[in-house]
Image 1 (spheres, helix red, strand yellow):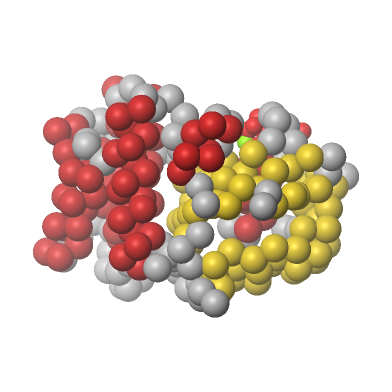
Image 2 (tube, rainbow, N blue to C red):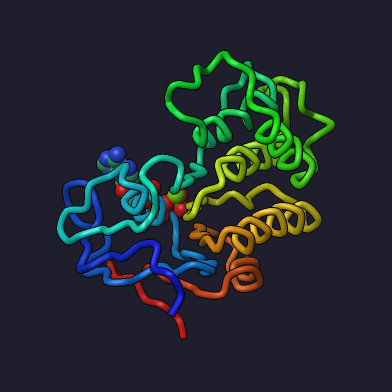
Length: 218
Ligand SMILES: Nc1ncnc2c1ncn2[C@@H]1O[C@H](COP(=O)(O)OP(=O)(O)OP(=O)(O)O)[C@@H](O)[C@H]1O
Ligand SMILES: [Mg+2]
């Protein structure tokens, strides 16, 4: 049995009224999970609940990852800093791995600096490193957000529609960069994906939200 990274036990998610109820499911190292379902059904809410950003209405979410840096989250609205360069945004991910005494204006240690360069290369955005993020296209910004999360070296990566706006070649670039991290660190990816066919190509588990329930496909 692979290492368990998260366990949801009889979890009900939502804000005031429940959106999805009675979720009991585990996430193990090596999993690539796609969450499918129509708009407004609760996919983002589920990711945010696993990430600890939203409290479950009932039930328990147990995480088996380090609280600092072990969990990566790529939000649907990417949360990049538009006026900073691509490189500075990706460095923010890497900085999570430093002790809290490493002040944000100090340069990164050499090994992490090299890792940031590798992340930029693996996502095909090294030529954009010095550009401010705000001038990039939507798909380029998505790759910056992915590079930032990968630089963090998370054990569990939660990604909300991070393949959106990417053409086939870039989907391949992003997925192979993420798969590399999963293999290297024995981590897992949980992704929300609108495009069902694409989800089936890249994921090895499919979760569907339907009628207020989460159903895992065989
Ligand atoms: N902070 C919030 N407070 C109250 N209700 C919210 C909040 N965030 C989202 N909702 C509501 O919860 C429902 C589910 O939203 P959620 O963002 O999880 O959907 P989704 O499945 O990710 O949709 P999409 O595919 O459009 O991104 C929606 O009706 C939304 O309006
Ligand atoms: Mg959403």
